[in-house]
Length: 626
Image (tube, rainbow, N blue to C red; front, top):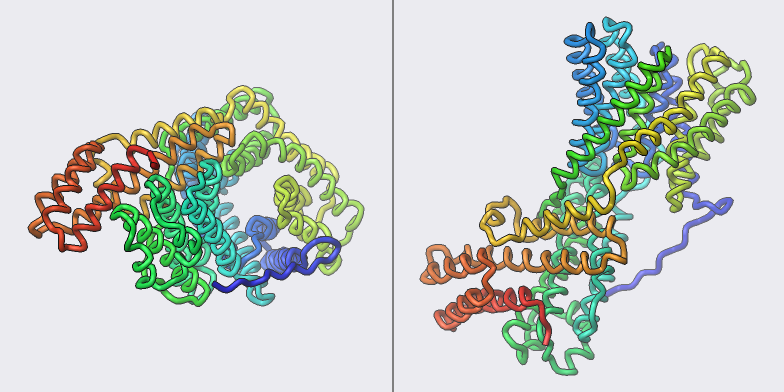
């Protein structure tokens, strides 16, 4: 195995040069979008620049993928706006009720997804607020406003795509390959520890599964990155799935009695690197169960290495697997209901207050609600918004009334935007979550509050009103979250663990899934990652239970797949009995089926391997190592 030394990034003012390059690309794209919006005389040219700020991600593929979901979400939102306004424009109370319900549904769909898919669902709700609610007094303008918004978004997408291509934005696959290789090394270290009969930490294992599952949304962006994006996407997906399967193989090995001699223990590293024939010679003195477990571990490790090689070379992998996402329906529904109630409470408050700008505030509040549910902790996001919005408003005031101060020339506007756009974009690329969140928020708030137009009005009253609304929205959202708290971590743990136990009940529904065993492992790994995200180290017993059920479900499905291959063979009846034993989770019946299959076909390698796998299943279900 070759070892490469990672070069440290070049720094400028203590920040990696890649972050500065990213900031410059964002600034140029904002300037290009503004110029095109002014030239085309859009009603809201700033919307094109705001689109650039929202699509500001470091790699080209991610920007294009997010742009696609942003455009799709906008189209859905505009259609929903036309339907709502067309049917309820004469009944405002019902319109606000329907709007709250639509927001709840959008959040529900977002909670069933991840990455930019979830963002697209949230945007479909925010678009209704922007198009229907903001135009509530002029319903005839809804269609034209929706078309203007679509044009501005298309302009922003074109601007950032052109800038990324001209300035050669980095590709994501290189970073992903490095991350996957690093995770692979950690999995191999865990395997070596198990071979040495050392106990593994369930918290560390759950964290490892969480890191692998978290790459799912990033892997999908490879599809739009380049001409060989589909091949790299398939390779990255296969590598991630194989990593989860290798972790399962390590945990299966840990459940078995280790009786290998000291020679194999001392030369454990070669287990992953030698050719299959040499490895077989090393395992001749093992029991059948241990030999099967070692063979499974070697096979999974080989799948990972082949996937990494295909990812780096841009070729199609030998195996293509999906990376299914697990979403708890009940948890998503509760999240959507809470978001709907927050919007409803805010709407009632604004209506009772009789504030003329209530609809504008409601639009911004909807944006904060939607963006908050995309984060692990919505209330923490509200606090960050409460801190970041005043900062963004002050910076927008400095831009409008200190730096520009009546300037109408576009070149001066472009130069004035540079420190604000570059600085905010650089902050988004920092590893500190708080600074990155503030940078992301201010990249948008500055453009929203500054209200860039052609010509620029420099109206202090309008500016102060917009700034006040931006600062007021997080306060209103926090108040609503105090009255109706977000779904707590304890509630998340309860629902997720209930789903794990339900999926492992002795019923036959699991066999009807449309996933391969490896894909089902990845789906379960996503769920374990979600549990680890809300459990913490203090919930060690909870993670141990989730991992134990993960081990059992995966090995049972692996055996079930092997048993299906005996259809039409002389061993078909024995295979059917073994499958019934697996479905009922009866260890004694499984062991008896393994013994019967071993005796029925002593010269059949496939039958012997399946018999060994069934015996391994019993040991995993009993959870012991001797």
